[in-house]
Image (tube, helix red, strand yellow):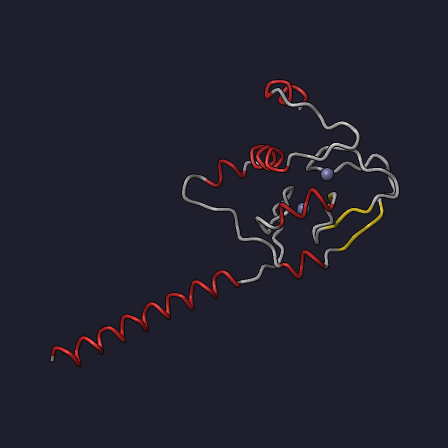
Length: 145
Ligand SMILES: [Zn+2]
Ligand SMILES: [Zn+2]
């Protein structure tokens, strides 16, 4: 791991530094093989449901060897972390932006429930487009037949 950081010219985070989310996402994607899997035309699964994310279980760190897999920083005793249903846990500031992009655990790809809002919107939009087409056809027929 340190080789990789050196190779990329990256420094491990110092005390009080916040992780560069995009950098860490890229590293996670690469390290867990999601990068290859994504290919060119595929996307990550949609974001996790907002409600699920807001109600994620929390726990207090009781073992100082616990490490957040996103930023690779050791957790401090007494720190609150977010626990996913698969029992993997992360700093809130590390996992929340991730879950706004995709609903799967960065470590084991366990999928969280998600809203189907996007899909619903897409479906309604298609329906509306179809209705417009029908209207135009009706109009056309009434004018030219
Ligand atoms: Zn973290
Ligand atoms: Zn997991």
